[in-house]
Image 1 (cartoon, rainbow, N blue to C red):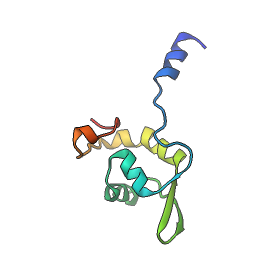
Image 2: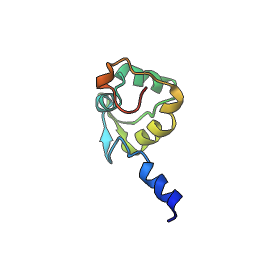
Image 3: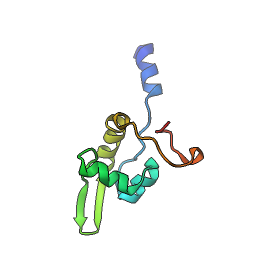
Length: 92
């Protein structure tokens, strides 16, 4: 590995979602984004649909969520309405 590749590996952002499945409320909390906002993005095809296990339980895979956070979320220009102290590292 040369020096450029080493720097790229060191500066790469770690995944927000560890391996596993997540409910919408957990996703909302980790992203500092409202559940209704996530459902709005989902209705517009901008957020993964998840795996519906029952009428009241839908789980989202960590792989799909990390892909969404790294590829789609930056294009949405979302600005959190939460106080700055409560915001995660994803927003301005």
